Structure formats: C-alpha cells, structure tokens
Image (cartoon, rainbow, N blue to C red; front, top):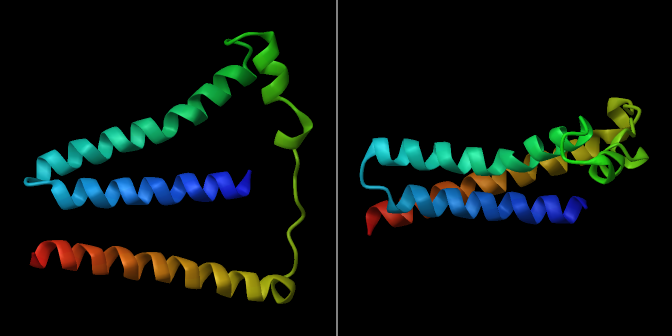
Amino acid sequence: SAMCRLAIGYMFLLNVFLVLAQSERVLDMFYDMLALNFVSMIDDIAFQLAKYDILGKHLRLAASAKCFRAEFEKKPYFLRKKMTIFVKLIYLFNLLVFVAGMIYISVL
C-alpha cells in the first residue's frame, strides 16, 4: 500500500512537471494545476462517501475496516531521527530533480 502511494505520488509529480513545462501562459498553468488537484482528491472524496454509507453497505464495510482506523504511537525523536533525516533527503532530491528539469526545459 505504501509503495503504491509512493508510485502515485511520483506519477503526480511527473504529471505536474509535464504540465508546467508545456504551459505557455500563467492562467493556463493555474487551471491545469487546479484540475490536477481536483483529480488527485477524487479518491479521498470517494473514500469519505463510502465511510458515510452513501455508496452502499459493502463499500462502507470496506472503508471502515480495522486497517483504516489504526493509530500509531509516536516514537521519541532520538528513535526516529535517522528516518527523519532520510525523508528530508528524499524531499531535497525531489526538489533538485524538479528544479533541474525546469531549468533544462526553460533553457531549450
């Protein structure tokens, strides 16, 4: 599940990059980003509708499964320090790749 979310996130970033690279006007870019945000939120809206029993009993039972209600206790900082640094490095890598791609596209 986490790997699927990661893959979807990277596909969304790739899609954002392509939209930004192909936009000629700022207003077009704004509308494209607005549409992308709407499409990315459709699954969250459908999940909430399923939880409220609007989409049927079977989907309500699936959306209210135990795995969706799990709460994880927060570990102290010294136990999660390495993971925090790793996640920050991943964010920095994504930013650098995105900026490098935009520089490459804008120079061409």
